[in-house]
Image (tube, rainbow, N blue to C red):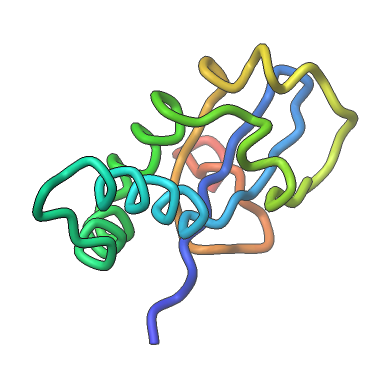
Amino acid sequence: MTEEMILFIQFSDGTIWGIPAKIIAENRAKHYANVDIDGDYYAEFNHAMENSFEITDWAVGNMDWEDVKEHAKQIGGIEANYNEEWYSAKKWIQKPITDPLPQNEDTK
């Protein structure tokens, strides 16, 4: 069993939200299953789940905060205008952890 992947997004107010990558992969798979003649929902879903670029790219290019907010879990802070910041806010994919801030040499 693979661990669930999460798209983390950090808005300008410093809040970090976690969105299950499967929500984005499902949205992408539904689209391609409907528009491609040979569209295979499960193949598209699995492709996205195995490729963090596809998850982030689809979220930014084809979804809005409104599409994911009901699935998002806030990690802390106060709310900003997420609809305006969805496209430009910092994003990354990783397995769930207790402190999702990306590590660099200064914070290790």
